[in-house]
Image 1: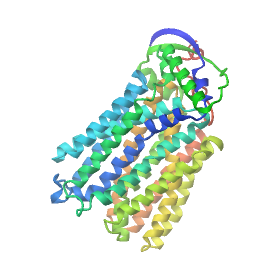
Image 2: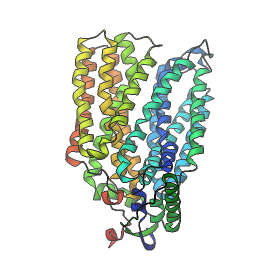
Image 3: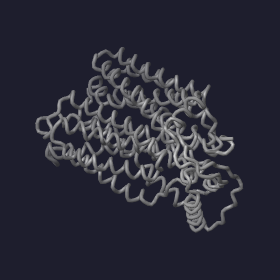
Image 4: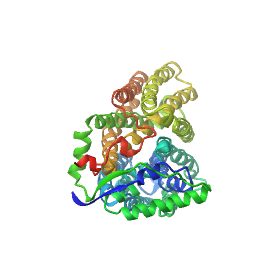
Length: 481
């Protein structure tokens, strides 16, 4: 590491004591809306898959090609998270959350002009890379700008907005795939164009979100950090009309211009091995059940409940709304009741709810609405737990490793659970055997239960605590002698 000087700062305490204000809304809207884009992207592909394989689509894909395109998107997201994650820790949150959004917008516009399968695969890979990079840059920036007492609920709300995008994607598909309104080779292109327009709107808001002051003072830019925090404080006082109390907690930091990737990686697994195991358990569990069910939900209701393809998007909208309500309604409890009981409860509770889901699936084979209700109830809890997985890995490792930690656990969880889940559930659904599909639900429940057990034994009580108290920065003076 390249050393500069040792400073004493109150920046973290000053940020954590702030009341909620217009500044925090700007952070929430400018940064948090990335999840809407991801939900829109994933759902649009699922909803328009049937159109893309039709002769008149202008693309000429097969059903197998759709699977390849989905794999390219997931692979891009995993690699993009790792690539942009380490750049986020090295070059700053703001540079990267602007760059990754631009990558997403350009790739999404390019997707709207797809003309051949190979080109479609390529632009889907790049789109995924942009979204994966967003996860690392966005979650680290949000956690470092939101007050400690509100961090849990804000993170859950942000991550839960994925399902707002999913609901919007399903609803858009109902309109854009209507050949009475749009030609078969145009509607799906408009869907991707709308995603790019939303990305541009978000980019305009995001330009006004500052760099993380925490990142700045560690990387030798303490004066800039002080100036940004002073500006935020002035805005908050002006907006609330109240004078802020003094912040008295300080931390001594040995500033560094650069921190090696090797040191960052070693920190997670040598200094915090139990936390690393916890992150893997939470991410693999939620990625397995979520990717397995979500990618195959339309096929499940179409094949086993004879729901026609025009109605499937309606079922997906209901499913998405149920998932969105979990983090929205339960989020504040992660800050008040606490991380361990709520995360463990969400994971174990969703695992237990698969028991009545399996019973409904086997005992009421003709009742699609009852089956949908059972699925929604199960994923109401699972969604809160899945959102909390991102919260967990973004706050339990030192600040210098935060973005890369998010990227690593997202990439591994998505690569393992996000590939195995869809393959397993797709194969079981394709078998036509209800018992085998029920077994698949059971395996998903076990994956979630293991995440819940890991939280019970390895979870960290991070509610309402400063990030620097949860995991001391590598550059803290008392960590370096």
